[in-house]
Image (cartoon, rainbow, N blue to C red; front, top):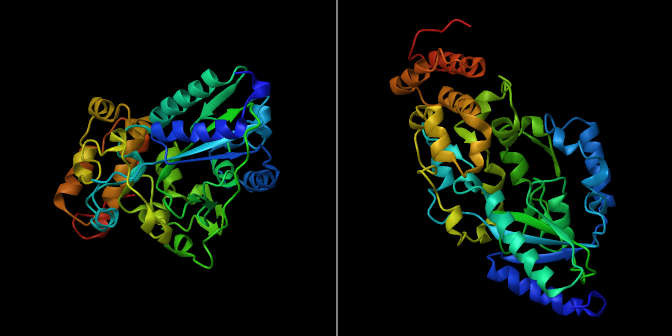
Length: 362
């Protein structure tokens, strides 16, 4: 099709049909003007609230100026895919049982990067087959892209006070993906915000990482501490992590809009290896080979076995006192990794403070 004679309104309608066929629940189209969000991003970086998230600052203005990242970009197609697995054990029940491991619901199945990237690429190929001269690039949390702001501008939802995108129909239990395109597709209108005076997400945050509406101090966020941070977890924050060993969903769990959220229909996002309801002791016993084998193809795999043990050691320290927990920790007390040994020693001291075992020297 000649790009100068394309019915772009009709093409946008067709893109929505293709996207639904590929398993996406919603599509929105925005322009590339992110100037309003750019100032907030630069201020956040200047304050150091990104911690060790160096990738947030490494690409200059490419993150907030799509045409600098992909020259020729005129529009961004944003897409939404639900991920909440229908068969997962209730999150609040798991969090209430300190000897169980809580893993963020998005990570219970296959790595979403792989799933979404494949579907986005398939959609891009359909557009390429329909329009001569089409050029574009797909993204899913894999490059300097302000995906929440782009999704907001495209009408997929509004930014909640916890900084995640919210939808009246789907809450926040979904992934986002984008296609940067060189086509002048018709724009969608942003939605109105619907958080009102609610502050439940700020109030529930275990580490008070949401320091103000729409502003998160990543250095205090449990998702950052258990996933992004490569070194030692600050000792003062460890007791606040509880039994969360990979990510944290608290701000989403209390959000009233998630009462309308839909579960996923994607088999790839189904729970694997009972990760929705498994004991800390069982997971702590995995050696590196078992970790690699079981979590291959999972988002969790990228933190590696060492940080996996670090996180579980903290959770075991926070767990209700028990001989099985102490024995598990003692089994790793001489681990080759200094990082693991440090967190195991801390956890043993925590258990000692409960009165179950003799005090462990600092």
